[in-house]
Image (cartoon, rainbow, N blue to C red; front, side, top):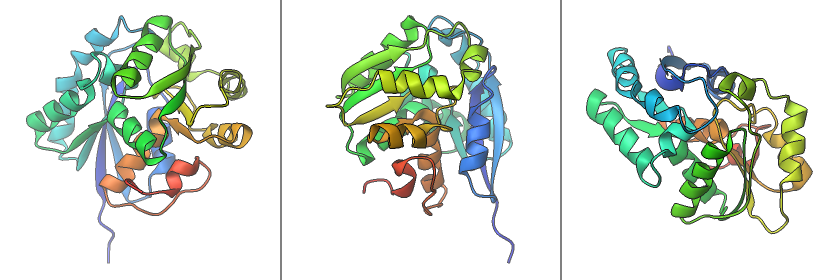
Amino acid sequence: MEEMRIKVGLIVPSSNTTVEWDFQRLMPKHVSLHSARMWLTGAGAEGLPRMNEDMEVAANHLGSAAVDLIVYACTGGSLLEGAGHDTRISARITELTGIPATTISTASRQALTALDMHKLVVCCPYQDSMTKKVGAYLDANGYQVLSLAGRRKEDNLAIGNDPLDEIVEFVSANTVDDADGIFLSCTNWRTTDVCQRIEDRTGMPVVTANQATAWVTRHLVGVTDPLAGYGRLMAIRPNQ
């Protein structure tokens, strides 16, 4: 019998070259990916309102393809206006298209809950304006941010080109012993490639934006098999 294909739509910042690559590796063969893009080039919070002006058009484009799920795949854009902004975005996408939707920030919170992570080390590639918004969003949702550090990359292309060894060293240098785990923000930062290395080095669970959202997406479309090599999150089910 032919296996039923599941179609996942991704709403992606235009200069992002990482999220689709991560999802391709973290999804089984019968899940196909279909992207629509929103204009973004910077690494601070200033360009995100303009980017989000493209969100509804992108959602409607994916809706025209009758995908089974839509993922809003930008961390900063989904938390820009603080607590609740992520759920308002997913609700608006579903209102426009009739298709279930989630966001990076929503999925990240689900992952943090699943791993019982409340006291956090948070590392980002962003300029300070965006790094502070990530910390404020987590604070407003009841997390305790013990360490908050940003790489201050000048634009989104620089984020996507950040060397993997430097990411590992940066995160390790900003880790504190009494945290429950580490959250790595940004869908264009190649942290999915190194989350297992960071877990092995620090002994702490690691949640990354793309890893967490792929984990949620897998379960939303009925994929429950564990996946090795991408952190302990990928071996558990939601609400465990």
